[in-house]
Amino acid sequence: MDDVEVLIAGAGPTGLTLACDLLRRGIGCRVVDRAAEPSRGSRGFGVKPRTMEVFHDLGVADRVLAGGRTDSHLRFHLGHPPLFDLRTPAEPASARSAYPNSVSLPQWRTEAILRARLAELGGEVDFGCELTDFAADEDGVTATLRQDDGTAPATTETVRARYLVGADGGRSFVRHRLGLAFRGSTDEEARALLADARVRGLADDAVHLWLGDSGLLVLRPTPHADTWQVVASLHPDAAGEWPEATVETLRRAVVERTGRDDIELGEPEWLSVWRYNLRMVDQYRAGRVFLAGDAAHVHSPFGAFGMNTGIQDAYNLGWKLALVMRGRAEESLLDTYEAERLPVARAVLAESDRRFSAATPPAALRPLLRFLIKPFLARQQRQDREDRPRYRDSSLSLHLGSPRARVRAGDPAPGGVGRIPGESRPVLLLDLMRGKHFTLLAFGAGSAEAAERVVRGHEETLRVYAVTSTDRPASGGVRTIADTSGGIRRAYGARENSLVVIRPDGHIGLITHTEPERALREYLRRLGMRPARETLAAATSVASSPTDVAERGANSA
Image (cartoon, rainbow, N blue to C red; front, side):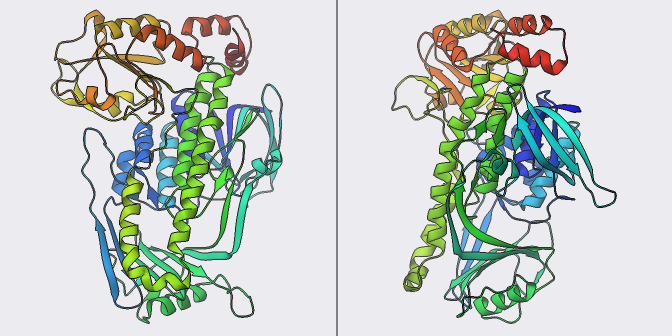
C-alpha cells in the first residue's frame, strides 16, 4: 500500500491550484483524474483580479498575463448590423492593486499553466486514474484507484492518505460517496451548446453577442489562438424535442441569430451541452475528506465565477492543511475552511443566478434591451474588477478598531509600495507577502518590539516587518519597510503602535491599534498556532514514519 499525505481527485484548476500550493509548502500530494488526457474545452474564460493575486503568489501570474487579454471589447447585436460597441480599456497597475483587471483566458490554457507549475514543483497529474472507492477513519483515508490509460489492461491499487480532497467537478464521486446532499435547482429548459471552433467571416477584434427572439449567441475569439468559444442557447421544438448536440445545430443557430450566411464555423475541437444547475453542498468537510470547486457548488457561467471560486477554495484550504500536517496548528483550524468558503459560495450562486436572469430576459422585455443592456454590461465589468471575497465574520478575523473602518480584518490585504532601506528599488507589499508565511506589519517601535517577542519560536511561519516613515532601518535588526509616502499606513488606517497580521492567503487576520502583544497572542491562540520548539518536541518523541510524526505532532498539546 502506497502512502501519500494528500490525495486530490480532479485535475482541473481547483485541484491543480491546491497541489501547487501544497507542494511549495513541503506537503506531498498526488493528483488523479479519470480522464485519459487534459481537458481541451475553453469552459471558464475569465481570471479575476483576486485570482490573479493567487497566481502571483504561486508564481504563474506573468504566464497568465502573457497568454490572455486584459482589455475588453464587446460588440452587441440585435440582428444585423451591430447595435453598439462597449470598450473597457485595461486599468494600469497601481501601488494598491498590482492586478486591477480580469484576464480573458480559456480554461484549457489556465490548466496548462498550472500543470507546468506543478511539474516545476516536482508533481504531475496521474491521468486515466479513477478514484473508485474510499473509506475514512480518524487517522486518514484508504482509497482505491483504478488505472486505465487505454493502452494496457486496467490495474487497481490501494493508497493510504492523511487527507482526501474531492475537486472532481459537478458530478463529484467524492461527494456522492460521502452521501452529501447537493441542494438547489435544475432548470431543464435552460440549455446551451458550448464549443471551440474556428470562425471565418467575423472580425476577431471583439466578443460578439447576439440576444434576440431566437436566443443567445456568443462568439468569443481566443487570445493567441485560432479558435473561438461559441455559446448558443438551445430551445425545444414545438413537440418538446431538443435539437441534437452537433455542429450542424450550432451552424443553424449562427445563421438564424446573426441574420448572416457569411459566417463559417469549422469542425469543433470541443463540443458540449450545458444545463442550468444552481446547487451547493451544506458542508465542505467530512472528517478527513474535503470538497472544493464544482464538487461543492455549481451555477450558471454568467459572471465567470465557477473557476475563480474553485481556485480560491483551494487557496483557502492549502495553507491550513500545511500548518496542521506539519504540526504547527491544531486540527480545528481546518474547520474554518468550510466556515469561510461556504458563505462565499452562497453569495456567488445568488449573483450568478441574477446575471443569468438578466442575460436571458422574457420576450416582452427584449425591445427595451437596446436601452438597458449597455449600462448593465458596463456595470457588470466594473463589478468583476472588485470581486474580492471577505471573511469579516470568520473566527480567524480579529478586528480591534473602529467597526466603520474602510479596511477590516477578513478583507483582502491592500497592496502598497515601500522601500527596503539600503536598496534603491521599490518593493511591492504583494511580493513581501508572497510565500508560505504570515506577514506582520508593525507600525511604530513599540509594536515591532511586541511582535518580535511573540514571534520567537514562530520565525518560520511569522515574518515581522517594521513599517517606518524614514529610510532608516528599525532598531534590533527587524526587517524594515520604508513607507516614506505614507501609502501603506493610509491603506490600513494605521497609527502608532498599530499591528496588522496578513494570512498566507493574503487576507487580513488581525488589525489592532492598541496592546499589540496581547492582541497577537490572542490571534495565535485562535489559530491554534504552536511554536516550532513544541512541534519539534512532539515530533522527536515519536519514533515512527514521517507521516505519523507530523500527525501526532499536530495532535499533541
